[in-house]
Image 1 (cartoon, rainbow, N blue to C red):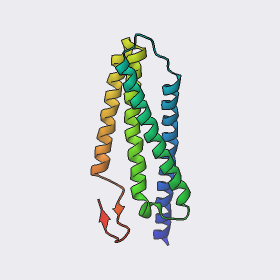
Image 2 (image 1 turned 60 degrees about the horizontal axis):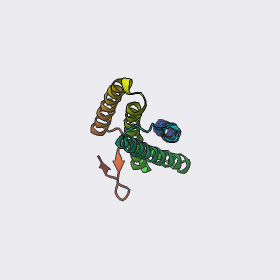
Image 3 (image 1 turned 180 degrees about the vertical axis):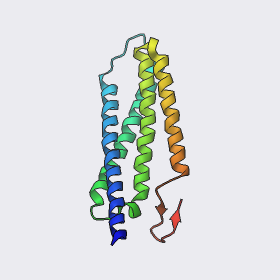
Image 4 (image 1 turned 30 degrees about the horizontal axis):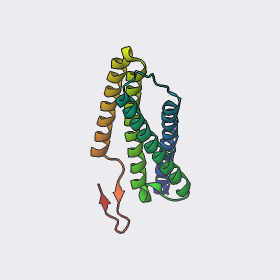
Length: 160
């Protein structure tokens, strides 16, 4: 009986985790979209900065929306199902899209600082680089000591 309760608790933690990925992805996609549509550029702004900003923002929006849709789909499809056993690969994909989208969001934020507030651009870029390195280290540590076990559905062997 306690094993069933423990499994249910683990499934609830994973479901809450998926909901958090969906919520945070929606928030970042909204910020990226607002930044992409509401910013005006001066005539003297170099075109390569505007193009790079547009590319980074578009990639950020796309990846965050992909993470949000995938996590939302998992929230709907996993009612009464063990999310940890059957959908761990999909959780990993949602999380990876969120992290990479966050990286491109930071890159777009740095480019926006270079476009709009050039005196403070070095500070904003330095902070973004620091946060980007922290994200990269977190991803590396998560991959090397993965808590999510990937299972092959045709055979019940663990794949790491």
